Figure (tube, helix red, strand yellow):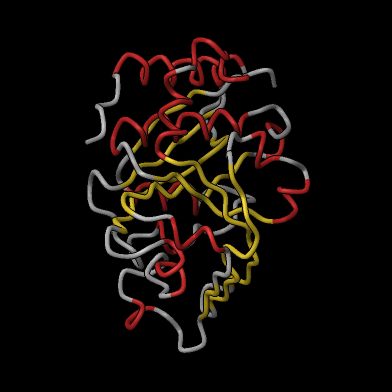
Length: 236
């Protein structure tokens, strides 16, 4: 049986990141209504459309099974967003979840186009099972990029995920371009592998070839527990 999350460790972990955001002029908040999240992201200039796995019209998220983070600048304009949701893969794995298109649509037989495809050839994706916290839809406004805001968002998302779910894995998908910039390691992911999601969603106009990146539940716990000793590496 897993030990319970230490609420003090989690709160301090999140607070360090929240303070770092405030120093950059961004006020962070966490929400749970994904209808509101989509209305915010659709009204945000330069942000691409949110993928269907975070849109209630294609993949409803029960309350308690997902959250989103919103960063507002000093003018109360959107500076950054990110979303997270829990996948129950007790009887499956992340590779199967992607390839079945259930990672994107609650019911692929209803919402998927006949030519929609997702191929996952990353071997480790088959080992990602149980309670899986998926983080995605990360966006930072151009004038805040290169300042560590994305990493702050990731930190808050991890802390909230750990507090809410104590997941077996935390994972995401990332383009090779970001990997080449070593952004994946800057974000604190311990593992990454090619062939995570070779995706085509016809009606969404999505064509991707992304790497998978992940942390185990124990790695996440260690990251949260040792925040006061390594200062979360917040040397942006």
